[in-house]
Figure 1 (cartoon, rainbow, N blue to C red):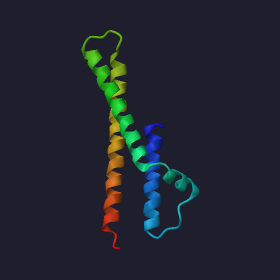
Figure 2: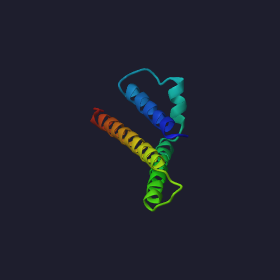
Figure 3: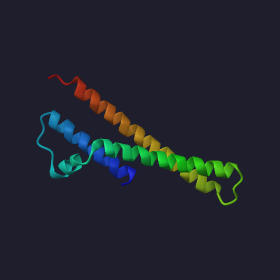
Figure 4: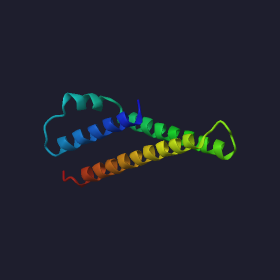
Length: 109
Protein backbone atom coordinates (compact mmCIF):
# COMPACT_ATOMS: atom_id res chain seq x y z
CA UNK A 1 0.00 0.00 0.00
CA UNK A 2 1.42 3.39 -0.85
CA UNK A 3 1.19 6.44 1.39
CA UNK A 4 -1.40 8.20 -0.76
CA UNK A 5 -3.89 5.34 -0.83
CA UNK A 6 -3.52 4.80 2.92
CA UNK A 7 -4.15 8.48 3.59
CA UNK A 8 -7.09 8.52 1.18
CA UNK A 9 -8.63 5.60 3.04
CA UNK A 10 -8.13 7.31 6.39
CA UNK A 11 -9.66 10.55 5.12
CA UNK A 12 -12.60 8.68 3.57
CA UNK A 13 -13.25 6.93 6.86
CA UNK A 14 -13.09 10.23 8.76
CA UNK A 15 -15.46 11.91 6.31
CA UNK A 16 -17.94 9.05 6.55
CA UNK A 17 -17.84 9.17 10.34
CA UNK A 18 -18.26 12.94 10.31
CA UNK A 19 -21.22 12.73 7.91
CA UNK A 20 -22.85 10.03 10.00
CA UNK A 21 -22.33 12.04 13.20
CA UNK A 22 -23.85 15.11 11.55
CA UNK A 23 -27.04 13.16 10.87
CA UNK A 24 -26.19 12.17 7.33
CA UNK A 25 -27.14 8.96 5.62
CA UNK A 26 -25.52 5.60 6.18
CA UNK A 27 -22.02 5.21 4.74
CA UNK A 28 -21.77 4.07 1.15
CA UNK A 29 -20.43 0.66 0.13
CA UNK A 30 -16.99 2.04 -0.67
CA UNK A 31 -16.70 3.68 2.72
CA UNK A 32 -17.88 0.57 4.55
CA UNK A 33 -15.16 -1.40 2.79
CA UNK A 34 -12.61 1.13 4.00
CA UNK A 35 -13.93 0.97 7.56
CA UNK A 36 -13.30 -2.78 7.64
CA UNK A 37 -9.57 -2.09 7.49
CA UNK A 38 -7.91 -1.56 10.85
CA UNK A 39 -7.55 2.21 11.26
CA UNK A 40 -4.51 1.93 13.50
CA UNK A 41 -2.78 -0.40 11.07
CA UNK A 42 -3.43 1.97 8.14
CA UNK A 43 -2.04 4.89 10.09
CA UNK A 44 1.02 2.94 11.24
CA UNK A 45 1.69 1.77 7.69
CA UNK A 46 1.52 5.34 6.36
CA UNK A 47 3.88 6.62 9.07
CA UNK A 48 6.30 3.75 8.42
CA UNK A 49 6.37 4.53 4.71
CA UNK A 50 7.08 8.21 5.36
CA UNK A 51 9.85 7.17 7.74
CA UNK A 52 11.37 4.87 5.12
CA UNK A 53 11.38 7.65 2.51
CA UNK A 54 13.07 10.01 4.97
CA UNK A 55 15.69 7.46 5.95
CA UNK A 56 16.47 6.78 2.29
CA UNK A 57 16.89 10.50 1.62
CA UNK A 58 19.11 10.89 4.66
CA UNK A 59 21.28 7.94 3.61
CA UNK A 60 21.71 9.31 0.08
CA UNK A 61 22.61 12.71 1.50
CA UNK A 62 25.23 11.20 3.81
CA UNK A 63 26.73 9.20 0.96
CA UNK A 64 26.92 12.27 -1.28
CA UNK A 65 28.54 14.40 1.43
CA UNK A 66 30.91 11.52 2.19
CA UNK A 67 32.21 11.67 -1.37
CA UNK A 68 30.56 8.59 -2.86
CA UNK A 69 31.03 8.99 -6.63
CA UNK A 70 28.03 6.75 -7.40
CA UNK A 71 25.55 9.19 -5.83
CA UNK A 72 24.70 12.22 -7.93
CA UNK A 73 23.40 15.55 -6.69
CA UNK A 74 20.12 15.37 -8.61
CA UNK A 75 19.34 11.97 -7.04
CA UNK A 76 19.93 13.44 -3.58
CA UNK A 77 17.76 16.48 -4.29
CA UNK A 78 14.90 14.40 -5.70
CA UNK A 79 15.04 12.06 -2.73
CA UNK A 80 15.02 14.98 -0.28
CA UNK A 81 12.03 16.54 -2.03
CA UNK A 82 10.12 13.25 -1.96
CA UNK A 83 10.81 13.02 1.76
CA UNK A 84 9.64 16.59 2.26
CA UNK A 85 6.40 16.07 0.32
CA UNK A 86 5.68 12.82 2.18
CA UNK A 87 6.26 14.48 5.53
CA UNK A 88 4.12 17.51 4.68
CA UNK A 89 1.31 15.18 3.57
CA UNK A 90 1.54 13.30 6.85
CA UNK A 91 1.35 16.59 8.76
CA UNK A 92 -1.83 17.51 6.87
CA UNK A 93 -3.38 14.14 7.69
CA UNK A 94 -2.44 14.63 11.34
CA UNK A 95 -4.02 18.09 11.33
CA UNK A 96 -7.24 16.71 9.87
CA UNK A 97 -7.30 13.90 12.42
CA UNK A 98 -6.87 16.39 15.25
CA UNK A 99 -9.62 18.60 13.82
CA UNK A 100 -11.98 15.63 13.47
CA UNK A 101 -11.21 14.53 17.03
CA UNK A 102 -11.87 18.04 18.35
CA UNK A 103 -15.19 18.20 16.48
CA UNK A 104 -16.25 14.88 17.94
CA UNK A 105 -15.24 15.94 21.44
CA UNK A 106 -17.22 19.19 21.09
CA UNK A 107 -20.44 17.37 20.16
CA UNK A 108 -23.13 17.47 22.77
CA UNK A 109 -24.43 14.11 23.86
